[in-house]
Image (tube, rainbow, N blue to C red; front, top):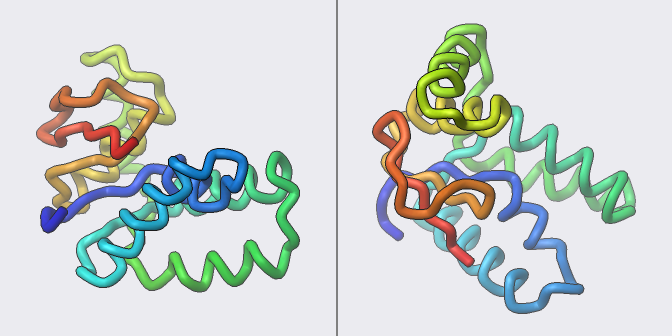
Length: 136
């Protein structure tokens, strides 16, 4: 995937999911491609969600989560701002997208991404000019 793409939280979570080896392989491969191609984008929301799930649900050690955060910080990271939140409110209202998913879409749009990799939304749908792709 050479296109500038936004990475949703589920890719970061599946990269840790040894209980789902197929999805883990896919997530690690996709993340590696974007890291090497310098065309993957994350947001502060994605990083917060990753840390929360990694610590609470996956029970990963704090040091591991910190190390992963250091790695993910090498991607372009979009700061979620009031402007992005307002755009998300519009997406939520006009497209009936869940609010937190709408923030992901608005962050992808604001960062100039044409693709949003997510398992949580309708693959193939275009929302606010961003094409949703389920990498799994």
